[in-house]
Amino acid sequence: MGGRKIKLPHYYFDIETTGLDPKVDEILTIQYQKISVHTGEAVGPLTILSSWEYSEEDIVKEIAVNMLDEYPWNFVPVGNNLTFEFKFLSEKFRKYLGTEIDVEFFVTRPHIDLKSVMILANSGKFKGCHLVLGKQGNGSEVPTWYENGEFQKIIEYVKDEANCFLNFTSEAQKVLGNRFTGGQRNV
Image: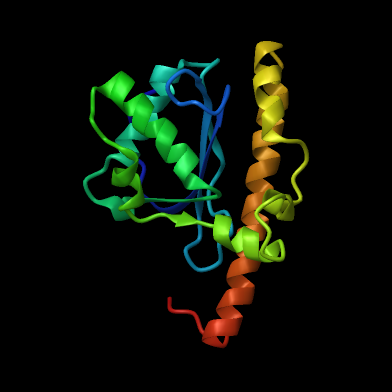
């Protein structure tokens, strides 16, 4: 893990954890994938940083190189309910980097959270809005898989979730782009 600086304008971004409390639960994976600003489609490979392959500290430090870049447009997270990720990163950056970065730091930087779009696609209902992705499995199974050493199941879940999210993002961009710009895209 070389602390490489990746220049990604927009990228799919997600984490998997052992639970919901950033103060006591661990980040198991951090995943990101370069996506097209214009189409929402993947234009690079999915990178999965896993704590069982390295350590939580190593994967947090690896992503910090990009998340803390002084020019925020080099790494624009695109995801679902990014506040969850931002809460975990804030706590883990404090723990491993000694920074006092809070959630506000992340939410004031460029990011695209599609949670609201997913709620609208779910007839305006919050409950079950994640189901519009059509993904297999549920993130609540990840801690059990981790405890049982079933790391391949986590990897397959992460890959499926990324694929489903990017399909949703691409379709949402097509529909909304055509509806509101008449199909005209600024290139």
